[in-house]
Length: 151
Image: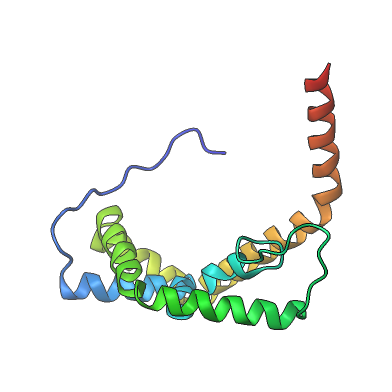
């Protein structure tokens, strides 16, 4: 982990039309726009065992997991749709505050290039594969730490 955090640009004024276009391109390049358009970032709440599954422990489910997920995710998306524009604006406002137009131009140019797309895909794969390959070790670490707290 880096020892220092890069400072934000802290831009308060509204973005120019060209900067807003860069913000939208940035959001599209990193996959954030798709998440906002579909509400997919809310999927975790529709997963079995999540807050929308009210079945008490030990109770038999009367629906399949996949159809139960679909029903709950549909309800989430309907509730989200009323707030979607607020999410969009919040991200656009923060990106405007965080980066200068020059920063965004350089970042977007990188992300939209083949090497930038490779970076995004490679980073995702690295996290997915490494997390899968180390989950047993992580469980051991948590158990060992928990055991040491019990002493």
